[in-house]
Structures are given as structure tokens and as C-alpha cells.
Image 1 (cartoon, rainbow, N blue to C red):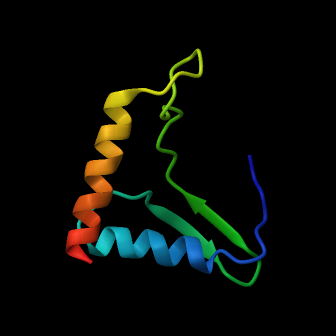
Image 2 (cartoon, rainbow, N blue to C red):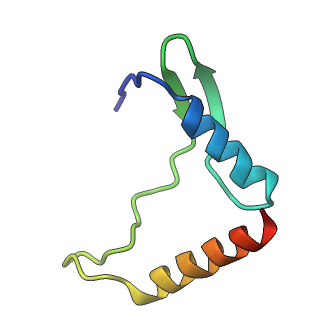
Length: 74
């Protein structure tokens, strides 16, 4: 699936900020700011909801802990 974006700089910048702070983020294979093209690693399809659309509490807890840790580092 492909989608051209008007501006990918914000995504690339946040991705780099996450990596610079020691967290995991998608690997960017190709970036073309002029064309709005970005090819990056697919991290899978697992999300924060189960197949019925119910929240997975352990994933929300993990996300909250990650955000708190990121806040302390930056």
C-alpha cells in the first residue's frame, strides 16, 4: 500500500527523536522529502484492541509506561 504525503518531515523527525532516546521505532529505508515518499519497516498489525474491538489493558499499560519513560528522558 502506498500513500504520498504532503510533508513527511514531521514523521521522520519524531521517528528520529524516538530512536535518539533509546526507544524502538520503524527503520526508514528510503525517504524523499520532495516527493513525500517514505518507505519504512512494517511493525505488524497488532494494535491496542482485540479482535472484538475491546481494549487490551496490558498494551495500554505498556504504552503508558513507555510514554512516562520517554517524558523522563526528554
